[in-house]
Length: 420
Image (cartoon, rainbow, N blue to C red; front, side, top):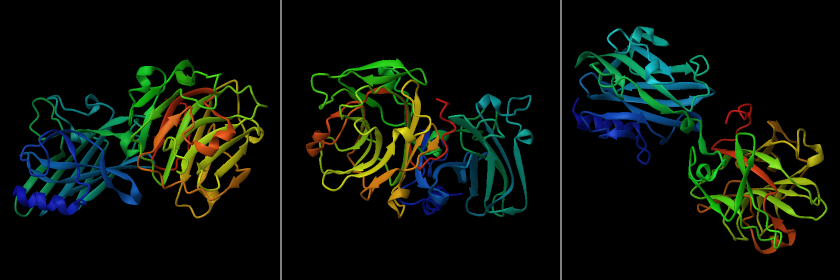
């Protein structure tokens, strides 16, 4: 196949603003000997808005003959194998394992496709075919990354019969252009940020997403997963907390969720402070919607939602006495999950404690929960808003925050919270 024709075919498959991308030596399309070793995040969206990855389908002569789209849905890895031009699929063999060493191989060390987990015999041959692998059945449900090997027998009226692989590194001595690729499941699952928050190095080296910045003085204490951080108190002027952890370059969307572990330590329950646990918005801007989780100790309630100093505050209220599992002596798991497109205000935000959804005891305003400023930052342990909000005596977080994760979908199942 001429490379110019292939490039045109791939451009037709992909949106102009979201071409697939691969890492390694060389690029595709338009490269006769691709050497991609890892599928990287591709901003193209798959079915129902799912994140999708893309990689080339490469024949034994190292010519790109098509494309493979990969996405994750409900614990299953989907791969759509799409040869181009007049190629058709006769058989597809698929293996999803944790490491390259787990791929079944022959005595010569090359992949043994007969022992792959799934083999699809296509009679008659098809122009494209979608394969599905259950990650739990493959024993990789909790893996952050998996190895995907796809082998295809293909035929063409013009080129005859050939073999092809999803492009990636070959095992030594094997003739195939590519035998497997590494797939980052974190990106497929929609994980925008994961920071363990257990040390200065962990704060400044996120597992996924932008790195954090330590501002002022914070200390480390035992938490759910190792250590977590707590801002050092400022008794002289608690209304201006300046000890916190901040994340920039984190753009939330109309739908999403934030989860973390938190160890409360509230003793001044009669003073009337508002303990700011987290805020997302523009620092020191009194006229911007902020996503906020705060504790009002005067009223003994948890306030969550969009706070906008230019309008009536949009707040979901949860009385602590009515929250099952609430504790000030052990870490608790807190989560905010929002859908800014929901018609009713009460359907736009849900709060979870230890995996249990809370019932709103009150709701004020009409929270937008979707028009986040492109320069918004996430701040843990300190307020963002200023101006009139100072009358509430805002102060830094009284407690330890540990292991924060942010997703690009409104997560509702937190049964995996005990896995770091």
